[in-house]
Image (cartoon, rainbow, N blue to C red; front, side):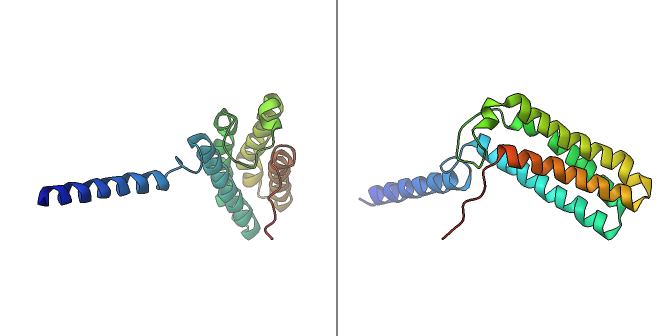
Amino acid sequence: MRNSIFWKRGALLLLAGVFAAGCTGPGIFENEDVAARKGLMKSIGKTWGAVKKAAKAGDNKAAGKAAGKLYKLAGKIAKTFKNKGGKSRSKPNVWTDKGGFKQKAEFLAVSAAVFSQVHSKSGSKAMVSKGVKNIGKNCGGCHKTFRAKKKKKM
């Protein structure tokens, strides 16, 4: 009798552990591809914020370093958006216009690289400003074309 209670409790504990582990990862609520895409885009947004913050503060070295990181992250976009599926804010044309999507990602990468290697090292406030605007234009241009607007909560 005592053994049966022990096994029941053990089985319940094991089941609770499996359930909890499943809830912490992307498994139940979103697939791994969507989680990878969202993670990459979150990293890009955070890094883009660091570029703007450093440039605004006049720290061109830090802005250039952050733009170099942005270049590397932007280079992963097309590879990360390889599998359709899962719930995300991607528009359907991400999957049908692969060439256009890849080109927009490359524009972002190139503008970040140029900023990192040229604008941030120029010492010119006007060039830094122009470089920041160019990165923003390429980042936002992709969002306008390939990302759905966030639904407003009521």
